[in-house]
Image (cartoon, rainbow, N blue to C red; front, side, top):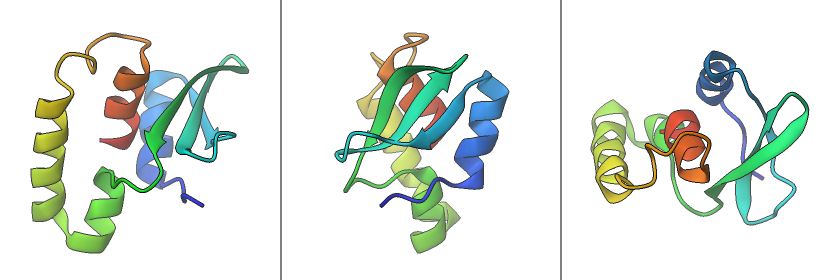
Length: 91
């Protein structure tokens, strides 16, 4: 099971949402706003920024972050979308 990091919890607080372990076994987190689930983010089996920081260090994590942001450029700016929450909470 994915361990939600303080990084993700802090980012969620800044966005005014809450995060919990996902009810979908293929996803890392569920995002809630005002008690209502609004998104399931992060595929299990793939890394994210805080995980890469812990396992490979800051330099590697920053490279992976840059690649993620380039790969998801179209969907990560759509406020309220799954891509938006993935970008803001996991990267």
